[in-house]
Image (tube, rainbow over all chains, first blue to last red; front, side, top):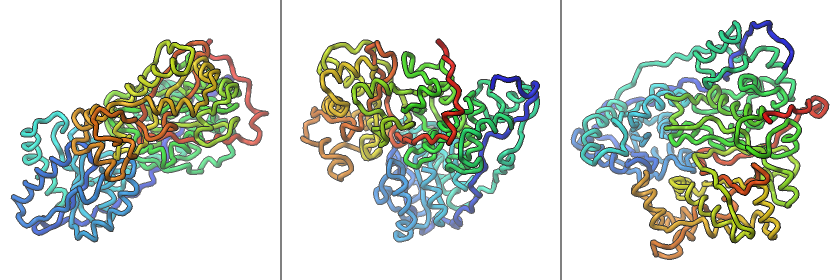
Length: 107
Length: 468
């Protein structure tokens, strides 16, 4: 690499790699949370237990017949066992009759 | 958290992801690689760790609650367009400075000048591997880009590497792409940086510094390959400051640590590469992320019992909040690293101590009182609902963390002796050491053998001396 090259003119290649992820469609949204069952997912960090309690209270005020499946049911969704935990999650949500999910905490 | 949300969306469940203000940009950027650029994020104003209970309640009810309802009942239709060059496209033309300006403006560089990846330099690098340039070595989050051999060469050129470093660069990317390493976590807030540890004859063949100043820039292979790692994280994995790289502070990249294989052979201790499952004499690299650490000056004594207490004390102190990885959260993946100098290793070996005996002694002595362990995580840190007793009773951590109910009982910071990793390097005649605090499963020690092209020994030039 010590020989004179390029005569001071460079044409440089793109250093990145092609994106492999196609845009996916989000799940259908609910018309309302009225009468729906909402699962709480938590990564065990940043006071999520407190936040979910407050959210439950606020959501129940607006939608009195809303139901919740506690984060305690699912265990930690982050941590070293994340891949294993997420693998079984969809089936677990189906079995529990869940309609929607609140996931925390990114801080 | 977003990966959990994406798994739910894929399965047909609408989600809302609770996101502190400082993570909003990262959330938006990360969601693209997950396939859901418009995934619903619910804002938690400020940061949750510094709010009073009253303020937290007010913010959740006044701001977050409405966003959760909106996320679950409506779509955010704002799309993200991603028009990009083709994989081998020429993206900048001009003199050295023009190309560097263009690359910097496009976010391809770390702020230092790069060597432009021209066709002739790419060919030179690619000639040092038997891999096809289009071969995909892995796919890396958060961007979810193809890690091709071509992109390895491009970033190697840019970092100032020599073409003959290519086999090492490929092994690095293979390690990065290994799921056990966890490259997707490389933007977490502690800002841990990866250390590449090298073993094998390639150290001498390519002129790595394996002596004094082992962690300092000044030698081309150590420095430029360390820089390559960071450039690859940026350009292919997709970690960019103020977006996906949320290092609160961070550091410049670490130079490659070349272990002193000769001393290890002399004293019949295994190298790091051997600890990772390879043979003595194999060319092996090991990568792991470290979120802190520091040097120990003048480790004094003439027997293991005199030399090791200082090291044990420092491993315990430097691995502070990182003990969260010792618990159920990290599933015991904490792997602290101590680098001891050859003179210390020789003193321990002279007393008849093997590396594993040193690790066993350290395991018994790198301990802290249980109450202090729990205070760190429950009261000072981020795990308010957790304790050691529950973890043991639920079978999530070994019973040695609950040998009694005495809060003053001493508990280890790892699960077994071999989790305390020991490397040998640095100034051969100085009795110092260095301890790294590990980032556990968010950059777990991962090793790969370096595969050399067929005509390797005929082609490598004798290395220049470097910065002496």
